[in-house]
Image (cartoon, helix red, strand yellow):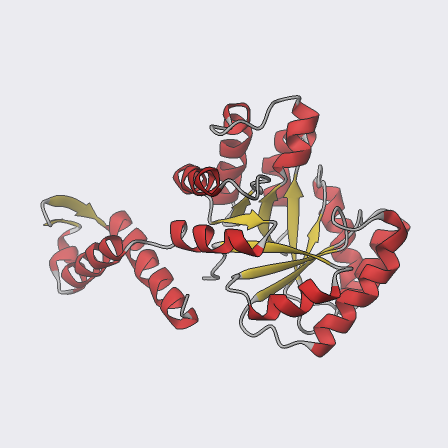
Length: 285
């Protein structure tokens, strides 16, 4: 299990932000060479990320680099420069619309001797409609990431507080992730001074089944980390369920715990809650 409550985008051409990121309570740092970087600064950002990886200690934070389109010269240069770096856990591919993109990237990574995983951004209507094939295609794929800004533009839907226009797309992608054993992260909340709206979006993402949320500013970390962590009451209930089941009652295949009918599937979910809480406790945040 990997802790992915919060995934913070860090512009690759912002040396100060890359340094500060080593002190932040983010589960994942997405070092960004794509949307956050102007075309004229792409090479500078690539070198900046390489320098930051070699200079800073990011501890237990999962390091992911969002590269440019892997079919472009810039994207291929990103991949060749960064794919085999020992600190990088994954490369995040933008605007994935087919399984072919994943296979192409993996082929290039194999040539570089890279052991990094692949993450795929789903941010176009075609990507949403092809999500099952994308999620099933490549054993090196670990995480799906929703790109709701680009998706909103392509779908011509407003980004309302309830995100009505996204419900089908978001749920479709969550189902594909669960079907194929992947994690999935919700899109960003673009209103930096809307703390209430951010928390609502995180809570909505949790209800929809997301594992965490992508973020664009450190001030958003606290809300995501809190919402996507199990509550103390949920952890306590899960621990009681696991203890009772393991004590022998589960041998019958079903039992009543705290007035609730419990089967093996409920215990499996409870074990995950306990394990997630243990990871958070180890992280200390």
